[in-house]
Image (cartoon, rainbow, N blue to C red; front, side):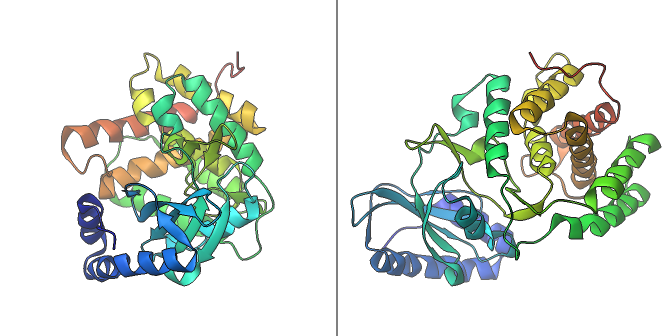
Length: 317
């Protein structure tokens, strides 16, 4: 039987409470039964993400793989659907799935991520953009549609602007509302990763880089590009010129992904406004309060204002 890592157990219980405790108590048996069913043996130490335990294994045919078992949550339902639709094109291969147990047997990739092994922002944005382009395939019909969330986004913007103190001018909020109105309600049926960032892009043998941990939505590819920019926050905070650095990342990502730069800017600005309001209402995982939360909140608001203005030039080198 496996021994669940302490950090994973503590964070799961802190987030999920009693249901998390029950799931953790069942997890060793779940893993043992899946290893037997899929004819695998453990092949190394356990790792984990925010919601999933990852067990490196060797299959009966001696191929390396990983068994991933996630906490049962609506946000994890469509991960195997996305992998199945991609069939290894830009993402790890799906070998087996057990939807009732939120479990998958996946192609093993190197645990080192794009964010850990690369420091050049152009390279990071280019790799992520290229993967975004390849992952933009027709979405399975049963995936949740981002367009159906447009009304929720509009209502949240209005409620947060009314209830929360903030430093964003009306024109910045109006820009975000216009994005919801003009882009949010009419989105293509394209498969969207939903959480594309440098830590979810791993080194691999079959290809240089492969995506992992998708949410699996149908919508606008620009949604992924906007999320990617948001996750470069600490790099952008260290940049001598935030405006130039932000537009540079968007420019490189858009060119590699085959996206319209201005459309991507609109999505990115909406994400920045949403992040600023989220910070004021909930805090961030990396900062629940204090000076660091204030710094990140001010950054999100500044980024939202910058992106609401069209750049004079966005041409990539």
